[in-house]
Image (cartoon, rainbow, N blue to C red; front, top):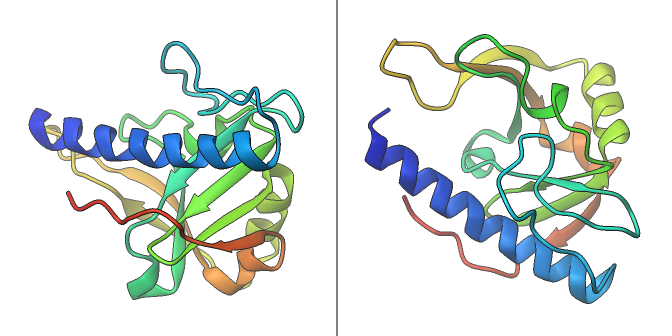
Length: 155
């Protein structure tokens, strides 16, 4: 992935995280905030429910699946294997799903139709992250599902 593509992806991800943080401030914990610097283990600090991890999946509306990252392009654990967050938020073009991280891990383990895939951008070395592709309906059962209230930002 070119550096400019990566910067656009990160910028969009930060906007999504800010929208989710605002929701947590309004509905859960008025002290919810983003960390002062980027950390891999979570995206939002929330004292009342624990830290929160936010992931946007831009293809769920086409595939009916969520891609849940488990390994980065270098082969190191990432995503759901790396997070220390108590809550996990999945965002697609239509919905925002809020759930306990352990509930998402359970839903992934229980899913009969999941499969491991390469995902995301290809690095300059030709590598890609890896994750589980899990049907949306296998996850919505363990989540609070909200209609997305903020725009879909294009790349």
